[in-house]
Image (cartoon, rainbow, N blue to C red; front, side, top):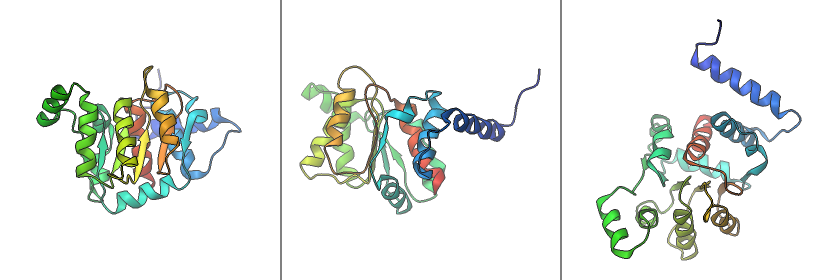
Length: 205
Protein backbone atom coordinates (compact mmCIF):
# COMPACT_ATOMS: atom_id res chain seq x y z
CA UNK A 1 0.00 0.00 0.00
CA UNK A 2 1.40 3.37 -1.04
CA UNK A 3 0.59 6.55 0.82
CA UNK A 4 2.12 9.97 1.47
CA UNK A 5 4.40 9.98 4.51
CA UNK A 6 6.00 13.43 4.44
CA UNK A 7 4.02 15.86 6.68
CA UNK A 8 4.66 18.87 4.43
CA UNK A 9 3.52 16.95 1.39
CA UNK A 10 0.39 15.78 3.24
CA UNK A 11 -0.50 19.36 4.10
CA UNK A 12 0.24 20.59 0.58
CA UNK A 13 -1.96 17.90 -0.94
CA UNK A 14 -4.71 18.57 1.61
CA UNK A 15 -4.91 22.23 0.59
CA UNK A 16 -4.93 21.25 -3.08
CA UNK A 17 -7.94 18.99 -2.41
CA UNK A 18 -9.69 21.75 -0.45
CA UNK A 19 -9.19 24.21 -3.33
CA UNK A 20 -10.45 21.64 -5.83
CA UNK A 21 -13.56 20.84 -3.80
CA UNK A 22 -14.39 24.50 -3.23
CA UNK A 23 -14.66 24.75 -7.00
CA UNK A 24 -16.02 28.12 -8.13
CA UNK A 25 -16.18 29.39 -4.55
CA UNK A 26 -13.20 31.73 -4.29
CA UNK A 27 -12.07 34.38 -1.79
CA UNK A 28 -9.55 37.22 -1.57
CA UNK A 29 -6.14 35.69 -0.88
CA UNK A 30 -5.82 36.34 2.87
CA UNK A 31 -9.44 35.45 3.61
CA UNK A 32 -9.05 32.28 1.57
CA UNK A 33 -6.04 31.27 3.66
CA UNK A 34 -8.05 31.55 6.86
CA UNK A 35 -11.07 29.69 5.54
CA UNK A 36 -8.99 26.91 3.99
CA UNK A 37 -7.03 26.50 7.24
CA UNK A 38 -10.33 26.08 9.12
CA UNK A 39 -11.52 23.51 6.59
CA UNK A 40 -8.16 21.75 6.79
CA UNK A 41 -8.61 21.48 10.56
CA UNK A 42 -12.26 20.37 10.52
CA UNK A 43 -12.83 18.72 7.09
CA UNK A 44 -16.08 20.73 7.12
CA UNK A 45 -16.74 22.80 4.00
CA UNK A 46 -19.68 24.62 5.60
CA UNK A 47 -17.13 26.97 7.14
CA UNK A 48 -16.71 28.50 3.68
CA UNK A 49 -20.28 29.82 4.05
CA UNK A 50 -20.46 30.71 7.76
CA UNK A 51 -17.09 32.39 8.36
CA UNK A 52 -17.35 36.18 8.57
CA UNK A 53 -14.20 38.34 8.59
CA UNK A 54 -14.75 42.04 9.22
CA UNK A 55 -13.13 44.36 6.71
CA UNK A 56 -9.59 45.18 7.78
CA UNK A 57 -9.52 42.63 10.60
CA UNK A 58 -6.72 40.53 9.16
CA UNK A 59 -4.51 43.54 8.54
CA UNK A 60 -5.07 44.82 12.09
CA UNK A 61 -4.35 41.37 13.50
CA UNK A 62 -1.07 41.11 11.58
CA UNK A 63 -0.03 44.56 12.78
CA UNK A 64 -0.82 43.58 16.38
CA UNK A 65 1.21 40.38 16.14
CA UNK A 66 4.15 42.29 14.65
CA UNK A 67 4.16 44.73 17.56
CA UNK A 68 4.15 41.88 20.06
CA UNK A 69 0.58 41.85 21.34
CA UNK A 70 -0.38 38.79 23.39
CA UNK A 71 -3.06 36.27 22.53
CA UNK A 72 -5.62 35.33 25.18
CA UNK A 73 -7.65 32.13 24.81
CA UNK A 74 -10.73 30.91 26.66
CA UNK A 75 -9.49 27.30 26.84
CA UNK A 76 -6.27 25.38 27.35
CA UNK A 77 -7.08 23.45 24.17
CA UNK A 78 -7.05 26.59 22.01
CA UNK A 79 -3.89 27.70 23.77
CA UNK A 80 -2.23 24.35 23.00
CA UNK A 81 -3.15 24.55 19.31
CA UNK A 82 -1.61 27.96 18.61
CA UNK A 83 1.91 28.07 17.18
CA UNK A 84 3.62 29.71 20.16
CA UNK A 85 7.08 29.54 18.58
CA UNK A 86 5.92 31.57 15.59
CA UNK A 87 4.09 34.06 17.80
CA UNK A 88 7.15 34.34 20.00
CA UNK A 89 9.25 35.45 17.04
CA UNK A 90 7.39 38.76 17.29
CA UNK A 91 7.50 38.97 21.09
CA UNK A 92 3.96 37.79 21.83
CA UNK A 93 2.79 35.08 24.19
CA UNK A 94 -0.39 33.03 24.64
CA UNK A 95 -2.26 33.25 27.93
CA UNK A 96 -5.21 31.43 29.44
CA UNK A 97 -6.49 32.42 32.87
CA UNK A 98 -9.33 29.96 33.61
CA UNK A 99 -7.14 27.68 35.75
CA UNK A 100 -5.56 30.49 37.78
CA UNK A 101 -6.21 30.06 41.49
CA UNK A 102 -7.50 33.61 41.95
CA UNK A 103 -9.88 33.17 39.01
CA UNK A 104 -11.28 29.90 40.36
CA UNK A 105 -11.72 31.39 43.84
CA UNK A 106 -13.48 34.51 42.56
CA UNK A 107 -15.77 32.53 40.25
CA UNK A 108 -16.87 30.29 43.12
CA UNK A 109 -17.40 33.30 45.37
CA UNK A 110 -19.57 35.09 42.79
CA UNK A 111 -21.32 31.97 41.48
CA UNK A 112 -20.33 32.66 37.87
CA UNK A 113 -18.19 30.80 35.32
CA UNK A 114 -14.42 30.87 35.46
CA UNK A 115 -14.56 31.95 31.81
CA UNK A 116 -16.19 35.23 32.85
CA UNK A 117 -13.72 35.92 35.65
CA UNK A 118 -10.81 34.85 33.46
CA UNK A 119 -11.91 37.31 30.78
CA UNK A 120 -12.07 40.12 33.33
CA UNK A 121 -8.48 39.37 34.30
CA UNK A 122 -7.45 39.06 30.65
CA UNK A 123 -8.85 42.48 29.79
CA UNK A 124 -6.90 44.15 32.61
CA UNK A 125 -3.62 42.52 31.61
CA UNK A 126 -4.03 42.73 27.80
CA UNK A 127 -6.07 45.87 26.99
CA UNK A 128 -5.17 45.75 23.28
CA UNK A 129 -4.59 42.01 22.96
CA UNK A 130 -5.95 39.41 20.57
CA UNK A 131 -8.87 37.54 22.16
CA UNK A 132 -9.58 33.99 21.00
CA UNK A 133 -12.85 32.40 22.12
CA UNK A 134 -13.64 28.93 20.82
CA UNK A 135 -15.64 27.34 23.59
CA UNK A 136 -17.29 29.64 26.12
CA UNK A 137 -20.08 32.01 25.05
CA UNK A 138 -19.97 33.50 28.56
CA UNK A 139 -16.40 34.64 27.85
CA UNK A 140 -17.51 36.35 24.63
CA UNK A 141 -20.50 38.01 26.30
CA UNK A 142 -18.18 39.31 29.04
CA UNK A 143 -15.66 40.60 26.51
CA UNK A 144 -18.45 42.42 24.67
CA UNK A 145 -19.55 44.01 27.96
CA UNK A 146 -16.00 45.12 28.70
CA UNK A 147 -15.70 46.68 25.23
CA UNK A 148 -18.96 48.60 25.69
CA UNK A 149 -17.68 49.92 29.02
CA UNK A 150 -14.46 51.10 27.37
CA UNK A 151 -12.16 48.81 29.34
CA UNK A 152 -10.54 47.09 26.37
CA UNK A 153 -9.75 47.72 22.69
CA UNK A 154 -9.05 44.32 21.15
CA UNK A 155 -6.73 44.15 18.15
CA UNK A 156 -8.79 41.15 17.03
CA UNK A 157 -11.57 38.98 18.40
CA UNK A 158 -11.83 35.42 17.15
CA UNK A 159 -15.41 34.70 18.19
CA UNK A 160 -16.11 31.07 17.40
CA UNK A 161 -17.68 29.52 20.53
CA UNK A 162 -19.36 26.19 19.85
CA UNK A 163 -22.57 24.87 21.35
CA UNK A 164 -26.28 25.16 21.89
CA UNK A 165 -26.61 27.67 24.74
CA UNK A 166 -25.49 31.20 23.94
CA UNK A 167 -22.99 30.39 21.20
CA UNK A 168 -24.95 31.78 18.23
CA UNK A 169 -26.39 34.60 20.34
CA UNK A 170 -22.98 35.81 21.57
CA UNK A 171 -21.73 35.99 17.98
CA UNK A 172 -24.75 38.02 16.90
CA UNK A 173 -23.98 40.50 19.69
CA UNK A 174 -20.39 40.76 18.49
CA UNK A 175 -21.59 41.71 15.00
CA UNK A 176 -23.09 44.87 16.49
CA UNK A 177 -19.70 46.21 17.59
CA UNK A 178 -17.22 48.17 15.51
CA UNK A 179 -14.22 45.98 16.36
CA UNK A 180 -11.98 43.69 14.28
CA UNK A 181 -13.49 40.20 14.39
CA UNK A 182 -13.55 36.79 12.78
CA UNK A 183 -16.74 34.87 13.52
CA UNK A 184 -18.40 31.61 12.51
CA UNK A 185 -22.15 32.14 12.40
CA UNK A 186 -24.44 29.82 14.33
CA UNK A 187 -23.55 26.93 16.62
CA UNK A 188 -20.38 25.75 14.93
CA UNK A 189 -16.86 26.59 16.04
CA UNK A 190 -14.58 25.25 18.74
CA UNK A 191 -11.10 25.52 20.18
CA UNK A 192 -9.46 23.83 17.19
CA UNK A 193 -11.18 26.26 14.82
CA UNK A 194 -10.07 29.19 16.99
CA UNK A 195 -6.46 28.03 17.02
CA UNK A 196 -6.45 27.38 13.26
CA UNK A 197 -7.53 30.97 12.59
CA UNK A 198 -4.65 32.40 14.61
CA UNK A 199 -2.19 30.02 12.97
CA UNK A 200 -3.44 31.01 9.51
CA UNK A 201 -2.70 34.65 10.35
CA UNK A 202 0.71 33.81 11.79
CA UNK A 203 1.67 31.88 8.64
CA UNK A 204 0.79 34.90 6.48
CA UNK A 205 3.39 37.10 8.18
